[in-house]
Length: 279
Ligand SMILES: [Ca+2]
Ligand SMILES: [Ca+2]
Ligand SMILES: [Ca+2]
Image (cartoon, rainbow, N blue to C red; front, side):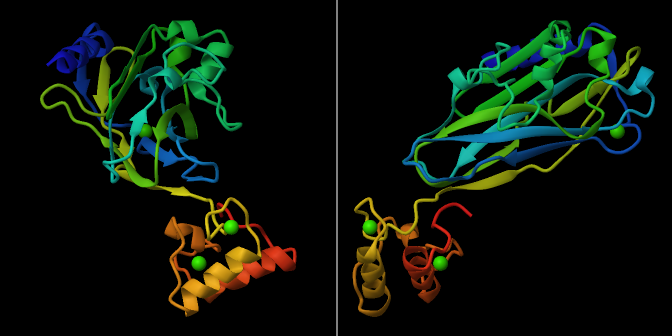
């Protein structure tokens, strides 16, 4: 109930002041893309896993079709209930900062649009920003209050924000749109007067298999050496014990444990071949 009140309040702030109506998305369909930036990790868990929210947006008539507000309600689910998977509130604060502690930071060398707005001195004009993080919900809205802000983002897959999850073990994490019945769903607002809203295209649900890239240490002693070759031979051909975790034996990362993994390991150890790990 509290959440619905927050959503309703923000809806009024975003769209209620000028009045709005459902309209057509002009030109090419605008699209919200969610992608997982780094699903494979070679360090021991927990892992910081980043999902990027990218927007493709065209502006046929800048005076009328510029985006003036967005609402992005998301839900996070995962397949490993015994392990912790969470949005990290301390990594996704509202503060403008290029440190690790901001959802608006640049990340991995990628230009983040909200951060760029701030650095260009325009960020303060985005007067209404709401970020709601709970255990399994992510909810973001922004509204422009100046014309410069409304001209944001025409182009192909502009990075809007990066959201960070803390994942404790291997699992499949899915991001989907969240619905608040009767109140609001995923939507963009455009037009200066009158304002109209529309639902952009999107690629959700998006599921990413969060994997450990620690491979080759088949016997789990912390080293990759001849003992691992012998362990793998024993497992494959002499009914020996299985690698633990099992995926440590999938040295070439193709999903199976077979002769190919043995050859990959030998090639790495004795012939200067590529090292096991994330592909
Ligand atoms: Ca469009
Ligand atoms: Ca080993
Ligand atoms: Ca394999």
